[in-house]
Length: 584
Image (cartoon, helix red, strand yellow):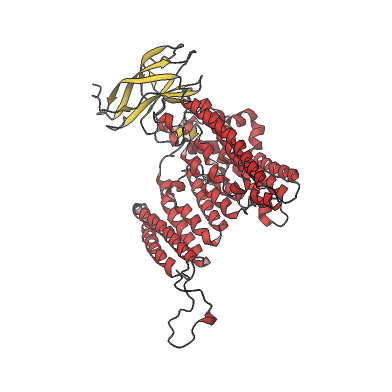
């Protein structure tokens, strides 16, 4: 309901004693919803101020800024309801500035006082930047020495199913080149975390700037989201990917301004920094070709120019390392895609890692992930008018089926999706286009059915691959007994029965999954590897790595066994932890 209408000052009651304000406050339905949204933004600022209050011990900056942020948040929530319009630039930009402070200060203090990195990727990036500054090729150097940058290194390595872990650069060169200037200027502590924090703040500000005024609260609210503030090494490529999808459908248009050329430049930098961006390229290339064709421009020429620009920028960043040692660069750049990494993440693979299915064939699940990507791309092409704006929101479906479906893969594209959904122009529907040609209703129906069938083919193949994956675990396992120390808080050994259900010899590597980061692979007592012949079985006692934390009483846990041929994970049934007697 409209309480007060917008009116110009010239139309206000000029009589003395009038109580009508010089500028009326717009409380129409749309503005009312926006005021509520901005109130939530200021509530997020309040949460940041309260978090900062707990960090008062850091010094006068934190102690003094905390009450300022709390007071600003309380005043901001009230201002949302009496400011003339929530689309006021002064109101929005002031909110953004204070929100940036409320994020930057607590996060910055956390980085400054955190003695170690939380991920091996961050440690490896810092090690790579340091190696480069010393004049050596980061892709050929062993970075095992970065273990000193991790509190308990064995809990943070990315493990491979053959019993090893990653100790080399596993990203394109942009992942560590952003750290090089900071280190050259003398920054040595938490360099990667500082760069990522700045990149995330830049992403939030960029999304805010690119959104229409009525939706800018979304950008600030996104900036304040705790899940996204500490993103590990994933924030660095986000500002570039946001720019790559902003008005991407205007690429090559003569009157598009900046949007007519910036997309592939930004995408090239994003692809040169993190492999996540690679998955966006097929969608953007397909869309650019469709848009050029629809506008009557030379679609092939525009598409080739778009792709050539992306590749050229990618090579500018990476070419020195390609020339240095092409084999080492290629191995490091594609490591996450081709190396046999252990299963992890919050996607479908959870059914195996949490003991529901007894394991998973990682090759088949990898095929399912590839088919999920193909399905999304086919659906994008078949239902282009509907999915033109929202495909970045659907892309994480492919990651959901991956063998390593980490949470960041599901959340990274949210800022990207917002930038695309709010800046890309709507496409005319295929049905409307057919109707304008006086096409019969039966023809429209056949066209729809054709699209459904074409999209269903890879989708059905995806389902088949997933079913095969979760019904093809090669081993059966059962926990027989455990021993502990440190009053039952440290797990020492696990005795496990294992049987090989395949017709070939396997050499499994074992790991405990108790809900926290693993400490590495368990080692058979005596040090000899476990080798099982076709349909063979054995009972083995495995020694846990040092400081392996025992599960909490009543918690469920399991033993995992990885095999390289077949490339698979097998698990025991879930076991309820009962406090065993400590080893004397």
